[in-house]
Image 1: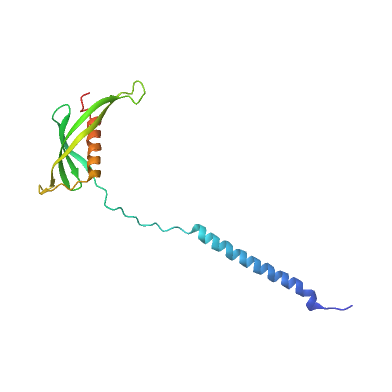
Image 2: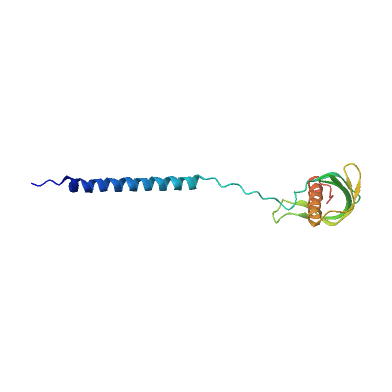
Length: 148
């Protein structure tokens, strides 16, 4: 009977080393994957070309059934406008849901002043005109000023 202890113990040591190496690699991989999954993405700073404007109606008067004047507060300025509008009934195809629809047909910017009264040249752009139209239309519809 011959005893060879080194060769006898060698496979179990290799097997243990393999298990330790495999376990370490698995633990390292899982911890790295967890770090990637739980990492929060930094929010990207996006800036608009210009700051959005704020529009409010300071005053509105209707001169006739189809024209009127309005003072719009645009950021830190008063925009004095005159406009023509048309009204018609619309039921959206559903009986009993009749409502008044207002459409601005002509908008004119008469003058622009600062809150303190200093006059400025017209600096409004197409987007301002579209937003002013929508604001006036909505105000007339909401307050039933069209008279249809």
